[in-house]
Amino acid sequence: MSAATDTRPETIRTRLIATFAPQQCQVEDESALHAGHAGAASGGGHYRVQLVSTVFEGKNRLNRHRLVYDCLADMMHNDIHALAIIAIAPSEIAN
Image 1 (cartoon, rainbow, N blue to C red):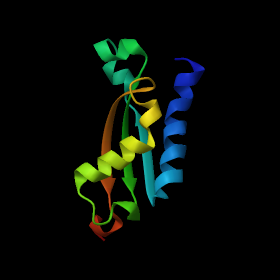
Image 2: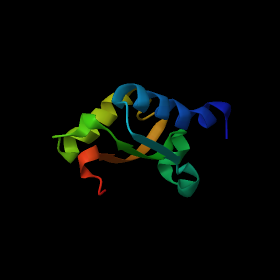
Image 3: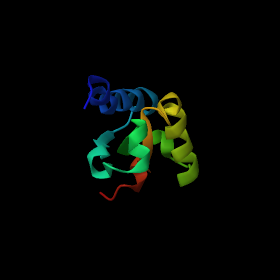
């Protein structure tokens, strides 16, 4: 794994925190699970993110995902091959 690859999850996390000021932000690098996959040959990684942010209040799932993709747009298709997103509003968390 290259140094650039090692910093991708932290770069993703930093951007998500700056954009969404989330109560929770998890970024998992699942690239190793997809070794040998055709998309992995391009060098882009597979990531799973989970965010809890007030920004998502009143927005449907599609709009939430669009916001996350917009935040990471310049990383898509080069640094990120696949992105699984869980975007939740604080009011949706069971207390």
